[in-house]
Image 1 (cartoon, rainbow, N blue to C red):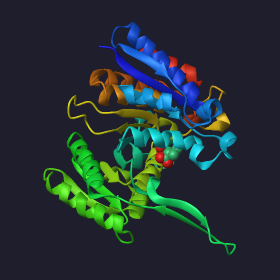
Image 2: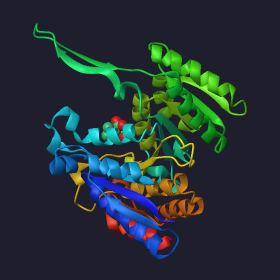
Image 3: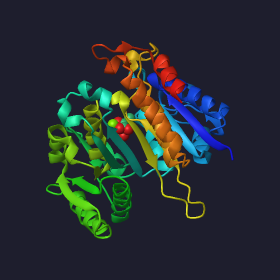
Amino acid sequence: MTKKLLLLPGDGIGVEIMTEVEKLISQLNKSGKTDFSIETGLVGGAAYDAYGEAISDADMEKALNADAVIFGAVGGEKWNDVPYEKRPEAGLLRLRKDLQLFANLRPAICYPALADASALKKHLVEGLDILIVRELTGGVYFGEPKEITDLGNGQKRAVDTQVYESYEIDRICRVAFDLARTRSNLVHSADKKNVMKSGVLWDEIAHQVAADFKDVKFEHILADNCAMQLVRAPKQFDVIVTDNLFGDILSDAAAMLTGSLGMLPSASLGAPDPATGKRKALYEPVHGSAPDIAGKGMANPIAMIASFAMALRYSFEMVDLADEVEAAIAHVLDEGLRTADIMQDGCSKVSTSEMGAAIFARL
Ligand code: IPM
Ligand code: MG
């Protein structure tokens, strides 16, 4: 049966890396391996320019009806002065919230060929395979009140609210433990229970869930220590489960261990529908819109292509095809092809579309 994809390239390099995914989809469809139908929409600054909103209701409707949303990146200087509710990031946050994509999976894998490109010493990152499971629809990103008030005495007061209910912690922890079982059976839960009530509750629920997964090893870690350990000895980790804000920060750190932010895919998943078992899902690279290099054909399309591979794996049960795409990425890296962000001595520098073409030629 035809599967419906919604492509939302967004802004900056989002556009050119999404072009590579479109080429991949059309190659897979032609070969008969897949039967995807494609719709496209606007998000971020591109949507603001067209509709005055970070995402239109019509495109939200398409997202709700799609089997998976493939997302590029949003943001750029051009929209620095648009109202806060309409800033490019608001489009992404609305997608996450309205599709209830509470589970954000951010794998950080160090491809063997890139172990030298990491900011860390090679022996620390060679073979690295971490999965950050970030809570994505709660916490300080969405908590109310969220406001700036004028105190009238020349001072202002800003409030963001960090809030979690136990069910939100429970369901994200269960995702982490389930995934740990398919990997190395180790979960670290990162919070700041030493200073935050939400951290105390987070840890209490994490321990309750851990009791249901006795076969999985469980460790608590303070989020600041987790940041430190990630750059000290990252291979001690398997799955790290954490809240929305800590997950945002820790996943950028984990991403850079792998050589470049341009390498990291992510999947954002909702709960399975009780009737059909299907999850709403959005797939996006962890990197941003990189306006400084947009339109120059320099962007690294690997995180975007690997995000599409995650869609094959998690939304369409095409695990073998996902493996093939990931193997093709590893292969072109072994051959020495590099976009500018991961360029190394003795390698050949290629453009966005050359990197895409080399990967697709392997399939
Ligand atoms: C991410 C990004 C987003 C976030 C921004 C663009 C709103 O940094 O996906 O990590 O903070 O979640
Ligand atoms: Mg981020």
